[in-house]
Amino acid sequence: MFEDLKESWFISKVETVIQTEINCLPLMFKNHTEGLAHAIVLKQYQVRSFVFSKMDGSRLNPKIAAVESVLTFISLYGGQGQILVNGGDCLGALKIISVQLLKQLEVESTTAYENGYVEMFIAPLLRRALPELGT
Image 1 (cartoon, rainbow, N blue to C red):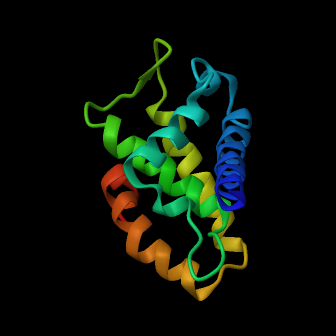
Image 2: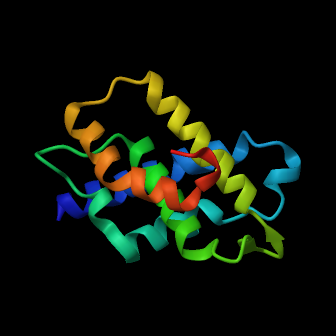
Image 3: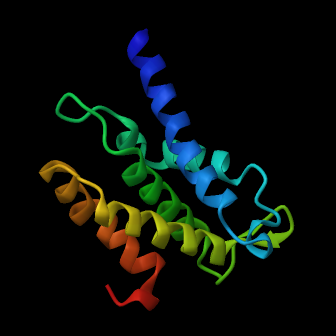
């Protein structure tokens, strides 16, 4: 029972990371983003909840889970060059959020396991969602 509660708490923490990045965007990118962070983590949980689970006794850095969630959302819905949310295109905002979170992760201390996770699971998503980065 408590394990489910801890997973819910972690999912909320990931949602907060995404919402914090949305709140830091310039106003023109923030329009139409109400509920977006929640939608992103819910979709991630439906598609691939593994990122929220304990691995080797601990959970990933919430920023890693947030990056994967945002990139998964872009991959699922950005195929037409836009993602319409509440009547506005938020694809550019999601790309900015992804890059910002990746920059933050570059300067944070991460474990070897987390680095491997990023290379194995997030790097392919990054290449698909943000080909303009040339990664």
